[in-house]
Length: 220
Image (tube, rainbow, N blue to C red):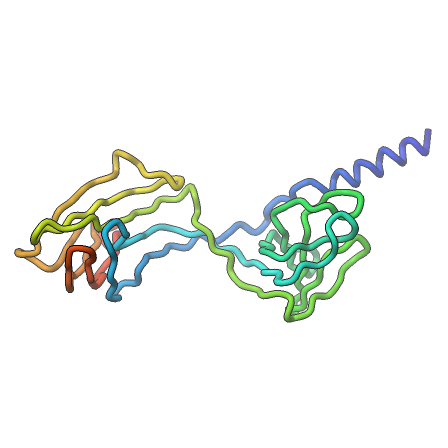
């Protein structure tokens, strides 16, 4: 009976390795605008003149070299390991995919010490990474549940320029917030829409060259 109890406990510990740890360090939400205000740019029909929204930025370690062999030992594939929190005096980074780690499945992890040294978490402890095996930088991705605005160039009809404005939520266009607009260049070279403004420098049948003066946020 005692052996059976120990076996069950052992199996529970192994299965527990596959549990996704709770995120203790959430990503930082950063606002972005493309292109930068004050820059001169050229876009073609169907391309955005202005994109504004938010991104999710997380500290991460980019493992440049795969370590271990899948299914046989502690396996750390090359790729992105995102910051998930702290363990004692170390910072913990974790891959996003369960990997076979000998006899069970785990999320491969990397520990960073306060001096910048990094270690792979293995079955028996840790293994130090060579400096050439990794890079530490921000992992940036679009935040799918955030609000985005885009102004797209859709062509010209003589001196009249055509645009489409779209708002996005959860990476999907909102039909009620898709607007087509036109501007006659004979009156003014400055185009203004929902707080954004741009100066038209040159336009032909295929493209428009402009200087971005302000983004959508300027009127909020």
